[in-house]
Length: 263
Image 1 (cartoon, rainbow, N blue to C red):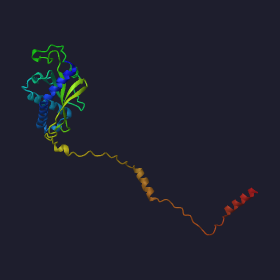
Image 2: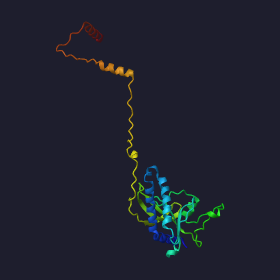
Image 3: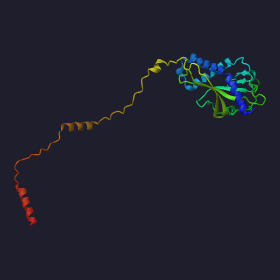
Image 4: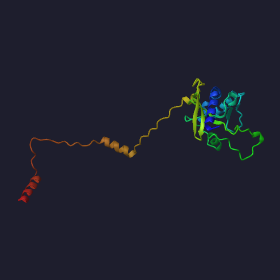
């Protein structure tokens, strides 16, 4: 099967099961709001995503239980995936879905391990170097030498985690690239339980603006300022007289000496 035919089969399988994906994701979000509404303010975004993933896994398993061609078996320590064979619904091919929170670019926040690289580049899981116990062995999903199409059922929650901003299915085209396959209708966006923060969180006093303290004057400066205010500067009064003042003997004698030197 060529790459184009594999992606086409993946798309047809995803579109057929869109209602189940939609129902499982909405139920998972309602479970999150129901069980953690009173402690919502304690969790950051990363912790809420982990809690949501647990409920998504639970709801996917319940909604795909007894669906012909579907397998949602899960073992701790491994990535949760939904495998769907298209044969029971008349579609040649099969698909493998992860179910995770995505960014607006349809990419997940998964650490780029070797397993993630192989999944995102449409390659089968690598064979482990260490022999695993029989109880941990699972039949590989590669059927007839053709690896199922790999994709993700993604969701973007709103800022309050009371509804979804977007639901979609994407098909991986590289380690850090994905192509949109189908948008899942968002039903009743924002109709989840509104999470009320504790009163103490809402009535905190606003942060006070720091003001630089005024510089204190030294005792010497205060005394100088007081003396300056008490002593008024002397004003010079210019007196005007109608008659010119007579010359004194000293000025007259000085003037005579000046005339004699000129001669």
